[in-house]
Image 1 (cartoon, rainbow, N blue to C red):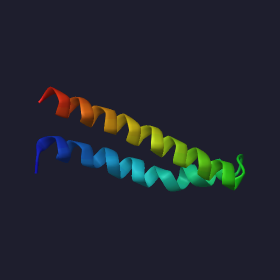
Image 2: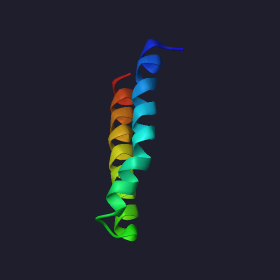
Image 3: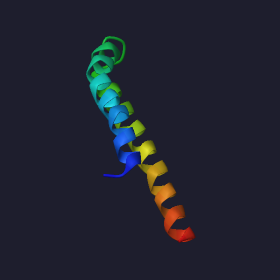
Image 4: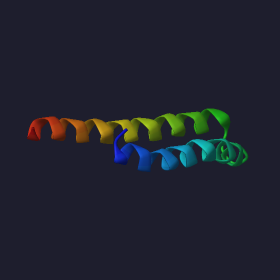
Length: 61
């Protein structure tokens, strides 16, 4: 396993573990459908950023 992957694993674990308390907290203030839409929008933005980074990496190789 690469060192970068080993170092990112605790971050992923932390983010994964925080999703449940944050979802419970957020659902108290935001309607469920809007909350789900915002989660999907955030996920799409993150995936788009990753995709752009991958395209740049491939273009530079």
